[in-house]
Length: 369
Image (tube, rainbow, N blue to C red; front, top):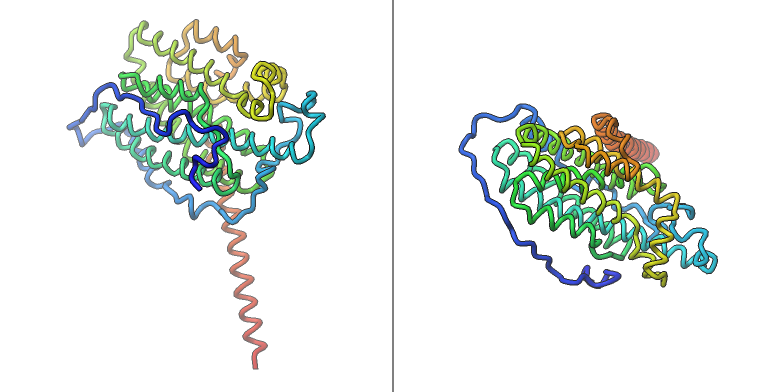
């Protein structure tokens, strides 16, 4: 079977082509670089890992409850449709929601890989090219892992959401070298990080928890990279240039907010688009989810120097303005620690198994004639 056989709806085009714009930039300065970025590049090299080995793919996943999602978190819960659903129907709904969420993660990671490669090509500084080359490899690994989870454990994919595709297209079509940073590193990656974190911290299933924790460990470096590069660059821009970037952020945040409703899932269960939108807007869980999803974006946007009046007003309208004071450094250090703790627990369990095997072998040998 191919991916095409697993899509709920076939993608409108098998290959999406986005015309390249802007210049490829070479730097002939090989000696000097920013100390912080070179340190991050070294960390990016040191922290490479193999998803086929670090993740325990032998862990079983129930495709009808991949994440342990409670009924209350499903948008149809408490509606007239829910009352008619059998347990099998509810399992199918959980499968579709997980497929939809992780499919958007998968498509976003491919977009991140392409944006990171575009940064290597277009950014003028060699230290940034070096780091972004390691991020390109990170994003390839993430796409590989999400694709494997969907193909082998869930067995279903959803096409890319229209709003995510629109933001990706706007990011890639812009000829200014900083826009892949802003669109991908700050908006798409920031939103994805918050979504990953919410699922990582609430799922009762060990395989998706491992996947999300290890990927988030990488993403902590990526967000730090975007902050460093853009903070330095945006200090040099005029007020008019900063306003252009703030407008891009405002439009992108509204697009991402509207991406999160999963209307496509409900339509596959016979719910009209209008009714699906109404249910989504009435969902208390979705309101909380939507608000928490901006916990990584708002402080990052403020930190890099985009905090004009219109942008602040947009965040007030979304109900996320107060998140501008959150500590990104604390969130990122927590992401790294959670992954390291999972490693420690897994290595300790493997060590116990080896010790038990040796003890059994010794006991068996002692009892032999």
